[in-house]
Length: 79
Image: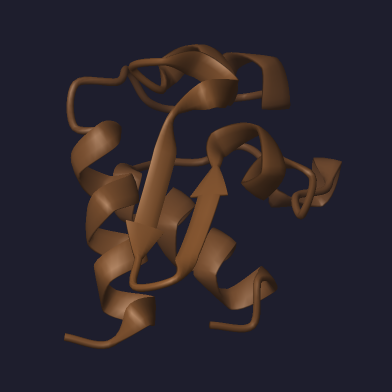
């Protein structure tokens, strides 16, 4: 599995119990199990939800599903 797919699947898994739509960066961080400290890792790449959230802009919201969040983050991270 590629780094992109691994990180994407971990984000989707972390948000599986979140309520959507998510309207703001604060609500997105609150939806992760460990908030901004929730960590995804693939090989040597490790990223927290807080770090990933810095890639997002107001135009990215609202998010409608875990898949929407994951795809947006991996795309903006250039994975």
